[in-house]
Image (cartoon, rainbow, N blue to C red; front, top):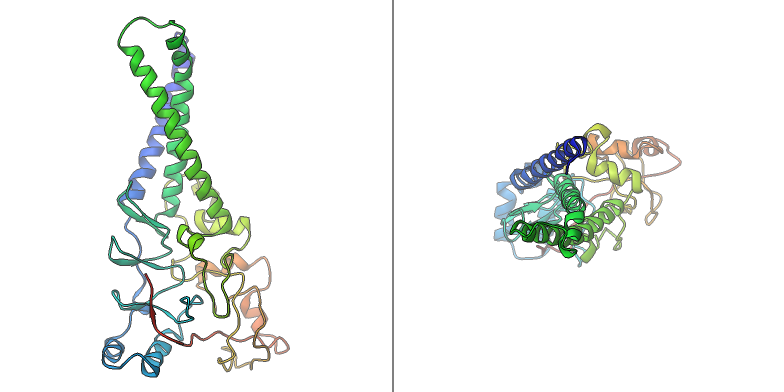
Length: 321
């Protein structure tokens, strides 16, 4: 390059992409995965009961007591409450046990060997930005190196060993760009559908049926759930995701006829009706995703609707990883 302005632009752009790439990569690696809060752990007496009693009605009662006040809607394939034997806790929705980390991870997506960390609720935004900035970094290198790569094949470069460095740099940047673009595109699709990698292979199972789009609230709300409401933080590797990772808004949660009344004391009149709001109140940090329409509390306050809360009956305890 001979033009000073071109040199300055390339240097500034290069260092911006490089710093954002390193920053997001660092946050993805060193952000500890979040684990379920203590309210999901069984009490000491409940643990003793599970160990002492045979698998049957006694254990169902233990799990029913432990899960009845928790904001969980998903079940195992057999319809049981999702319970982790190793961590001895009732699994929150979208939580899975990582065999590598040997702990339950909130909204686990996958365990990534490239970052030597679990990708989940606490660092999923950082992982997406890491993919985005590494892709932009590789594309920028390939684009700026392209003219010299062409000169290499047309014998327009000086006959030195440096020309082989140019060829290697272009091939490495181009190949990484292709692989990263496919991976980044896949995770963009996951965000738009509000799915994790694990949920693509095994759709969430709710109280009455499996629903592969059960957590999808529409593209805008799905995006905000990962990146937050503050758009100024979307492109920065700072945590801005909504919620606490233990409870999530759903587009479809069936009512439970075993629950006698709502918190307001209203009786149930519909056993199998689907509605657009979680049957239990969401955490404060999650519930505002549904504020474009009537809130759960507004609906439950109307006697003619007869909406009820959803309890969590323990049908059969089943281990799930």
